[in-house]
Length: 207
Image (tube, rainbow, N blue to C red; front, side):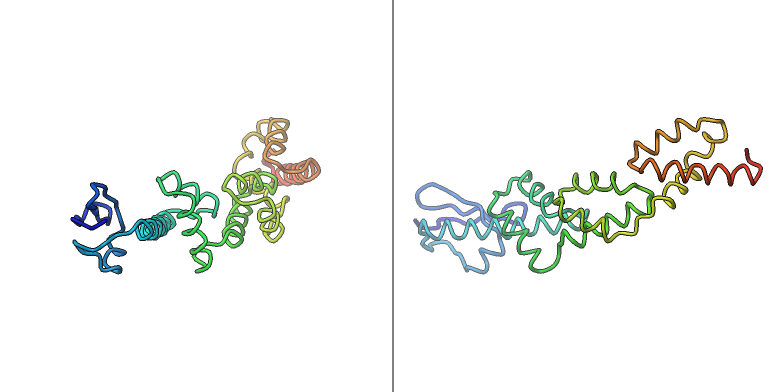
């Protein structure tokens, strides 16, 4: 097959027309690298090779664009690439290459998310569910949570002060207790922290 025409298109692609009436889209940088011109011969092997390389280049470019806007786990990044129309092979190749370059790291990202959960007074149990939903493996999540600075008492006290103080002052203790349990905090920690906080309110004269 002979290249009969090369026409730049949108999205950094080149439409290559072949003598057999077929056409293919390749990344423009790849076309420049391979010095493709009208009249060049394109074997079936070359078409397969160039198409795979072009898909990888475009998948990697798309991955970097996505990562510039949000922090994705490896699994979620794969899913985003495939939902954008890239094949599994090109998507895996792009994600693995970004891992090699240390552009992405599930371990590091999971640790950052875990610390963020701890700062936002999210219980370790709820944080586990949130991180799993982001696409991290259970082993990665458990390791991240183990290393994060979770302090149930401080977290519960912070929530009582910022979110539930009014309910406590109005006597809705049972509702506050139930809400904190639903958030994943242990029964013992909730009971002890609420007792201590209520005593502080009483001592300050708020109750």
